[in-house]
Amino acid sequence: PVATRYFGVFADGSLKVRGLMCRRRDTPPFVRRAQEAMLQKLAEAASAADLMALRPQMEEMAAGFRQRLGEGGMDPQDLVITRMLSQKVEDYRVDTPTALAARQLQAVGIQIQPGEKVRYVHREGKRGPKECRIQAAPFIETLDEYDTRLYLELLERAIAEVLLPLGEPAH
Image 1 (cartoon, rainbow, N blue to C red):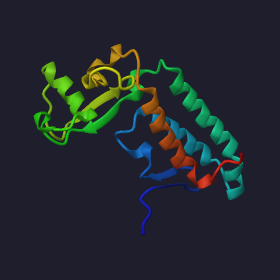
Image 2: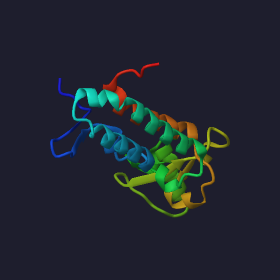
Image 3: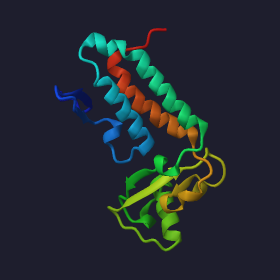
């Protein structure tokens, strides 16, 4: 079968990336930049041995991204998730993050139609009513906390996609 997720580097140093999180439009900018930075680091390797020698530096980079996210105080714009509205707001039966954000927009008179983008940030944890777990993008400037656990999970997926070819770390 044809691989749907891969990355490589051309002789001129440019990257070819398909199917990874950095290519998806719903990946938050911080996670996208973290994955792209790690891919750029891997592109420095000229041989398989060079690639394996990069493992400690890659782990260090990953730890830095985890720390930055875990410390809090991120710019909310770096955490925005963008999704496409697949149906009319009133037709959503399940309270998905996209539906919740769309309802927030509708509540203040912003009408959106299927096919339009909805941008939002996951707020802290599972506390309070479900409507408060999502903050639609026009209202994120006042965001005081975000769901660190959820964003760390997204970051871990992005890191794993890059580190997978390097095998398991030596313990």
